[in-house]
Image (tube, rainbow, N blue to C red; front, side, top):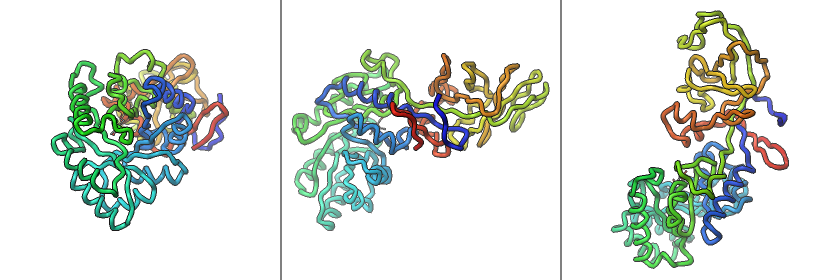
Length: 383
Ligand SMILES: *Cc1c(COP(=O)(O)O)cnc(C)c1O
């Protein structure tokens, strides 16, 4: 076990070697002609924006995907030099910053394209853009019927360097839903009709994680797998080549307090749990203020010395309690809140199921109060 040279008694552990291995598996699966864009938005799905982006660069990512200007600037200031694509909608007052920091961004309407052109002419600068086509997500992007005009405009204005054309899948993680194929067909038709399919200068991309797994036909020139890169399988039946992709995220803490609670006495706010007999109760210094979900109250569990114990009473902002029965535990003992402990495991999915949500929301819910410890083959490093 590694020493924890940090004074906070709870932390997130990221296995960077596993993360890089996931990216290598993805690259091997798509082959050398397909580029890899790693989505690192929302603090790299809770894994830490800068360290994950640096690891992605080392593992051979071609692009990083962020949601907004601010995330892109953080990466440039951290010394990342590979292409960065901002996936979210942009605002005209941000255009000069996109240029200054060499960030590629999304043009999702003719109206926006005209604003961008105007701004660029004023600044006497050019911009690298991707056009977004809406093939059925109905979030952002132009429908194929209207995208042609924006494409013509972008092609006619020398301020634009058209780097890519993309779309986003809405239902690729539903195994029996044929809609993914309809979106793909619509997108490929659009590309072909506009001479974009075989244009070596324009990157066509549509596949999120589920899209990568569902059909190789969706890989096109670049894939954008987020949740899969972090180790979570978007489909129940994954292609064999992708099955070695594994999660790299764990949450651990040291026991902060041990006490005996008398039979019949309530624990935590509102006494939602009452000790049925004299109980050994430990207190763990993590709470919903860190991103540990309050819905785990009386439903979740932790691991200590390779055994599972239940979370009892309401999870508080900074702490929660666990009933270890007749077992003993000592202040300073290490508990696993998410991840492996001896032959036991608490996967993210256990939390997302209890909380009736998706793995994504659990992951990016963990904020920066818990420090992140990055493990790699040379040792361990705090963020
Ligand atoms: C977040 C996002 C992705 C990644 O989605 P996953 O389901 O995590 O693979 C890909 N493309 C766009 C446009 C996104 O917003």
